[in-house]
Image (cartoon, rainbow, N blue to C red; front, top):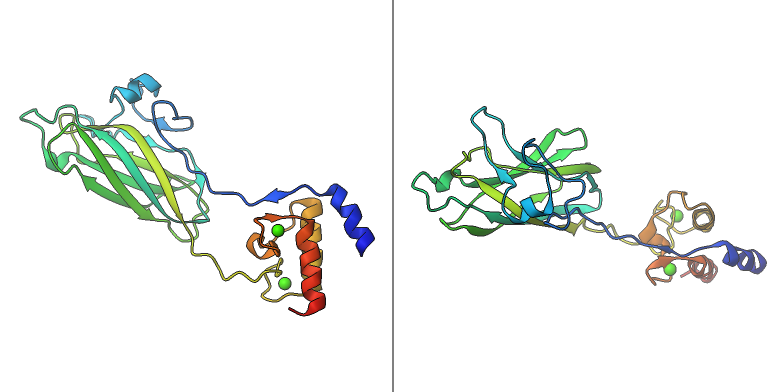
Length: 233
Ligand SMILES: [Ca+2]
Ligand SMILES: [Ca+2]
């Protein structure tokens, strides 16, 4: 077994556990986002100057800002902190009840799954609006849409930035060594772990496979797993 392990060492690269990344929106970071107003292309200057305005126009069209798709299977809930700008807040026609922002989560086909709406707390030009949604169960990939169903042009607001943060799913109980995730530790977990390290695409429970708990999956975990099996602990 030692010879096999030694030869594997030369072949195996460290596999690091990945952290979920979410799309962010600002005047310097808007790749993949889309705004459905054909007269206002997305660019840094327009975003910074409050031109990405969300409202329902006179034809009944709803102006919408949409995020790129992102994977969400490891996310329990998502929180958006929005830099919201209401340029006409001191107009007599400004209706604070229409100055709303809605965040919708859609599946990858664009079907809305859930939404949340907040209103601006007072008549002012600058607001930090916070919206949160639980991640729908079973959704593996989705996108966020920001819109104002009720806002007319005067009561509209503009998005100048969105910070998205995620809370992770409650982790399953970790059984260190149960690499194939069948609920117990056996020689098949050694096979699974070696196959994973060699091919990189064998299905594996990453948390369970980090037998020596150093945050990455390497040949050292195979050794630790064999030790565990031999010692019976
Ligand atoms: Ca197992
Ligand atoms: Ca490890």
